[in-house]
Image (cartoon, rainbow, N blue to C red):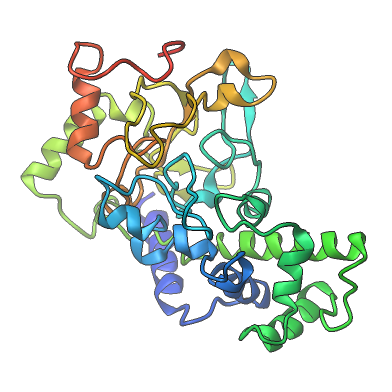
Length: 342
């Protein structure tokens, strides 16, 4: 197993560090340009990377820099903001589609905190049109921005949309809904493909090297690992073991079982979202009303890089959220935002 692990780790590290400025395939290249293009927002000031920046662990750099005050992301219209802490897009490629596990009797998987999108492509379609995110009025506006000769990526967009998807941006009819929706679908597909590239799934943490026998943990780290996998029971929802696929390939630990829980996190009194209605999470989706207060278990990969924590950014540090786990229910904290299903 160690040989397989070392082979996988070495491959991931090599590809991840040798990828260069642009992604490898033409489709990844297109997705990368779209992911970083601020022109695809209402005020040409926000891209996917604005809230999911690689240097910030694929989370919002403003939140990371000031997790005590900046708990959610501002939109292209900076007077508006989302209601949930931006989840990392790193390793999101491994989140399974939303489904119900009959054996366990619970829901799992899906993109967004409430699992409302099955795939990365489905997820990528949302922020462009969300008024508190990129705020574009419709799909045609997004495609018009892509096909605008003033866009610095225009020439590459024309080349790549034609070579990858057979779409001629120069002659695309923005008044034809079928053409627009097809181009929009392919835009989201390209972004999803880029998010599956090794830039997002490097598996190059110290723990990966430790599992591969190429690094040693300190005494304090070993104590933490023993607690994590033992008395603290962190691994119950954030498993630290690798997964072996039926074909023998190994997926390093993803540190999430992707199920849904209501941890009893209090309602945030941060001025950005204090006036928001109660967030029911999965239970706020039509047809899932019995799941009130539940949110998908986050992966702990890049966790030290991506404060704040919790769906509403209630905890600014890892110490705070661990303290919450240790003391929730004993009167230390305000009442849960949603009392059901804690």
